Length: 250
Image (cartoon, rainbow, N blue to C red; front, side, top):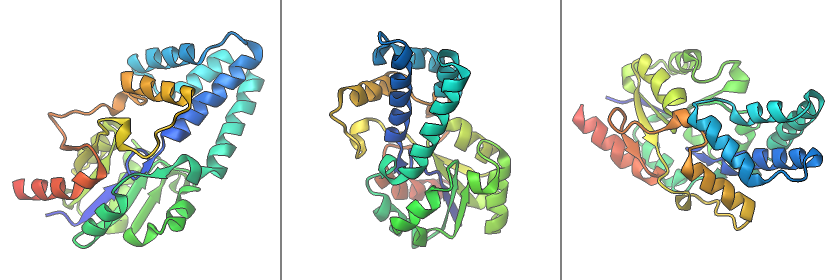
């Protein structure tokens, strides 16, 4: 029987597509400073090629290979500062989040296990989400990050919860499902079947080109859904019913 439910933040509770787009847009602008012929389409094609090869930290790989060390350092620091200072702007709360949390809170204890900056916590407070969670594990505060099992072990120890009585809800197999299952936790994948299910629907040409690229090849190649191994939902509103089904099947 489940007692604790843990949530990822990025691409689960919060839509961070804008964050990813900002990173690629700023890289595109930096590249054009020395190569005016650079196109955003070519950058997206390069991203897709890296993703198909299963590479991680793709934007950093592309930036390091195309910018001088000095320009890379400047660009990286700029992006980090902007993402931290504009956290709320780049992380929209996904639809049905409040209703879903209210329903689950009535039956389970809730926690967070997420790779996030320290700007995440005040954002949760500003959005009045903190009251739903009994435990919050943020990588930058703990000094460890997913897929390292240490952050999951920390959460379970703090919760006083047996792994078999817990569920991890995330959007990636590599960062969420695999390390959780290795510890004996259950897993539930959030797989957004289309960007139209989210709040950010930009009209900007480059932003839409970015989303089209991510539809063609996912932003995180190892986050692909394994339908045969893990239960899956297409939006946050489906989570309570899916959890109920999982409980009944045990």
